[in-house]
Length: 272
Ligand code: MG
Ligand code: MG
Image (cartoon, rainbow, N blue to C red; front, side):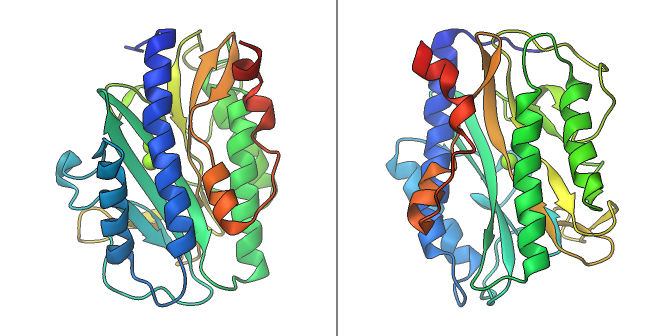
């Protein structure tokens, strides 16, 4: 059952989401060749606790760490290890935080040093598809409208859209109803209503959509060994329209990136 949130609950969710956003912003300055994921994981755990929250993933389904860190061909759910990041790597960092009983859960794929142009393009298109999907998350639309928009855009670039893993409702539980696939048919699935809160999170592969899982029981990687990207935001429907609860702005501030991609999803907030 979909759990509709009140305006007060949405504000609490924003607080949790922004702790994750700030954590990712802090990590953005630390991610470089030679640094390892386990070190970054410890930084994130300390940062989250210093902000009065608990790591949302640590211990969840027995996951051993604060961050899911998935380099290169890993799609999601990578377990941080001591291997140094290399120039030209990409690494998807997925982070959760729990505060006031509500979860934040969002993700960004970072470049490590100088990344190949075709990999940069994968990241660009995947992030664009996230906003294209978010635009469809509004009153009157349905789950399939978001999935269709993401799938259509990514496949038009020749990329593979992962089927086995999906976005989700978000709130007092990390995974609430409905499931939010990154593929689908227009006009199909559950109808969106005011006060819904979800995590939209395209997982897009440069090559095949097919995946496999490592024997660790967690790590998902592409079947063909080509890179994969993952971007995730937390979004609420406010005044009928999508409103971002999370932001990449802290990352952009750390990396000196100028972007207006989130502007249209802040309008609801500015007007109220
Ligand atoms: Mg996530
Ligand atoms: Mg998620």
